[in-house]
Image (cartoon, rainbow, N blue to C red; front, side, top):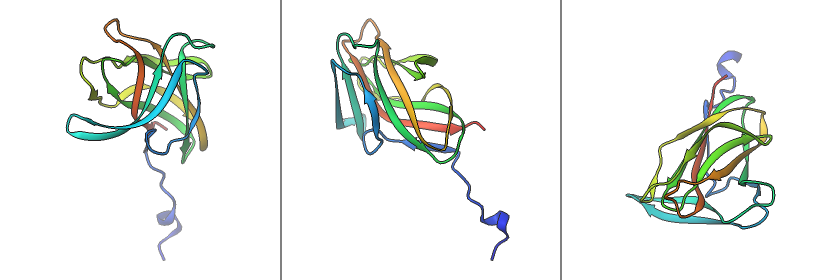
Length: 159
């Protein structure tokens, strides 16, 4: 049998959640919003993703969606989003306890396309369930909507 040190559990450095499949939703805007799971051909890929659409005003401020992300280990993580950019997409920003983290990401594009992993900021997360919130904080002047089509949420352990 290998020595104890060789048998220890090694947690992954990168953890990926796919909201269009099984990632639980903690909460989303109280009014003027909809959620749908969709599977579209984007470029050469069929991408299953979660569509979050908002219109008008939300009761408590910017429209939001919060996911429950089960982390294997406590620590500080860089948070990335991979989304579907397009003509109806808004600007999204990561939030923690109603405070913005990092810069807003503009998801507007004249044509629908899968984005690269967009850095959203860093969060201190606990082992187990964590609520990870994104808000639609505005839109590009060329965009015709307040959408957030999220494909993946990626966490990369910093420490």
